[in-house]
Length: 113
Image: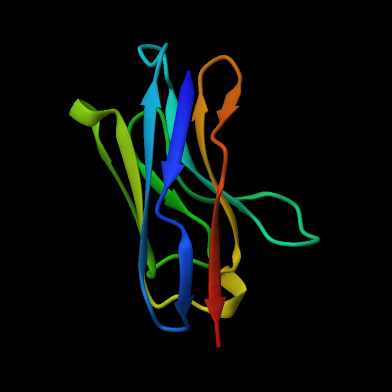
């Protein structure tokens, strides 16, 4: 499966961004999809993910500010990010879980104070 993420950019604190991720290829056996991020010097962490039954799960640091959604017809998931904080600055990755995890190329989000 191939994943193409887009929508990153620079924004001031309190602003919003919307990320998109389009899946293509062997999408028929995807069990779950989601968004992860990796800040400089830190480990990659889950931000918002869909479980196999479609339940959205959020990390504590973004709950109430970020919203994950999906459009099955377009094989696309989105991440609406509101009330952004400087600590949200990171490279955001889209991921799809089949028998293993497939990663998109990452999109940079920079939040200035």
